[in-house]
Image (cartoon, rainbow, N blue to C red; front, side):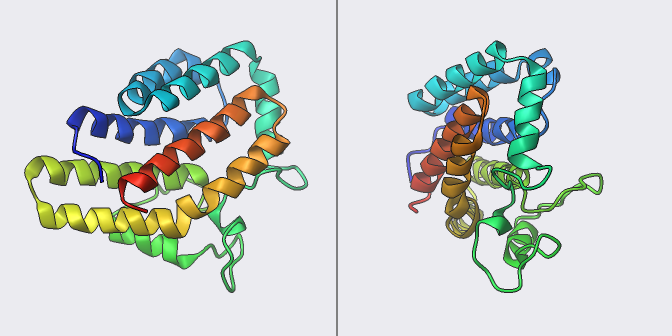
Length: 210
């Protein structure tokens, strides 16, 4: 685990949220809310390679019309017949008696252990990539709060939970998922998003001694 830097820690939290946002349906709010400017500020604090990835992602978004991005998003993550890159962990992890209607229960147990509640308004499956990134944000937040307060027992607990989550879930399936996006995407934006997300997760794994 690297030395604690509070500014970098906050930036890691932010990157989790910003990457999660990118896996929802693309809309004008990406530009209106200056999503990529905020991402770049956070990535610059975390790692220069991530900052370079955000610059490429931002340029790809600016160069592409929204309708084309929406069509690619639909093809990749929704279908209509079969998604090119299914955004659910249960599609990539081998486990018994697991279906889209009954996703892996152990990720729900990890959510519960971390105090993570999914909004009642969220109508998708709980192992969607955006949800798992938002859970990673919560773990980062909890870790940073424990670090700032000097609560070493709590810090150890959240580090263990984060390591388990990355090893058994997001870190285990982000590789093939990112590869499927890059293979199936027709826009540079989603290829860059896949690459950036995987690189960020690999940095997170190293941070907890994966």
